[in-house]
Amino acid sequence: MYSLTRRKFISMLSVAAAGTAVAPLAKLYAQNHPHGVFNRPEPGLCLTNGLGEGFGPIVDKLPVNAAELTDTVAGNLSQIPLLKLPQGFSYTALSITGQPMGDGSVVPGDHDGMACFLGQNGHYVLVRNHELSPAENKFGNRTGCLPPNGKVYDPFNLPAGQGGGGTTTLIVDRQGRLVMDYISLGGTIRNCAGGLTPWGSWISCEEDVSTLTNGVNTKMHGYNFEVPAMLGQAVDPIPLIDMGRFNHEAVACDPRTGFVYQTEDRGDSLFYRFVPHVRQPRHFGDLQQGGTLYAMVIDANITAICDGSSLPAFNEHASAIPAKTCNPS
Image (cartoon, rainbow, N blue to C red; front, side, top):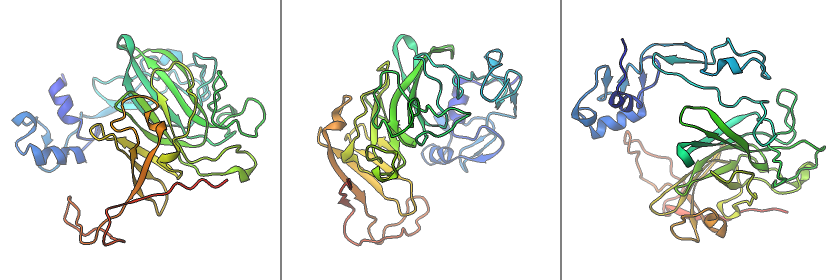
């Protein structure tokens, strides 16, 4: 019988779950633990070259709650395996586009970036992006992220009942059962990725810079929005303007400095660092107090840590320069 111990599971998280694959984390472990994790190499895991056998062969698996999936926007899924998993693994289909939600809404489409938080009573909280454009049609539904409490950033010039992107929040118990779900951010556009904060919130990023000229928007777009993990309803959507207006992709908060690092999704993108006015931010709303945005500049003669190759440099002096936020009216 295939036995998966906790130690082996942790060590093999650095390896792809199926087949033999190159795993970047395994390479990192190899650099720091040349004799194996905990100095005890696991069978089938080669840390010296980042190759491993993974968790074993994968097979079709029905979700634990397959019997509940008889009526979805994609039809009867009760007998359709949604994932292939190794032996000993199971999963639950928590949220499918078009399903009714606990706040009376329906699950929006285009699920994207998300983060998991530890909630109350041992529950887990998942805050999830929806990369939707205004009135985007998903299985005949154009509602998008339209919260019942009416708190939206942009109401859009659309027929009643139509919305755009945003986030939903799912509360899940320790057995993997859905306890509650609701719209937690509305009135935004193409919420792609984002990042969690050390104080328990999700920064949702708009990958869109459309203006009022398209006849649909009533506000400028291209901002980040902070969503508390356990608010219980849609947040009052306040754009984090000083974090920049661009095609946001992801963010990462440094818990030591409070700096927020940001990526951009376009061909000539930049790598940004946001320094909040509130030093060492620790609470929801601290980032709303503003800050200074910097763009990284690669110095000349800098080489990559990975393989020593030269990096393309366009500036020979500065390592970071202030970036001005553009907010055309």
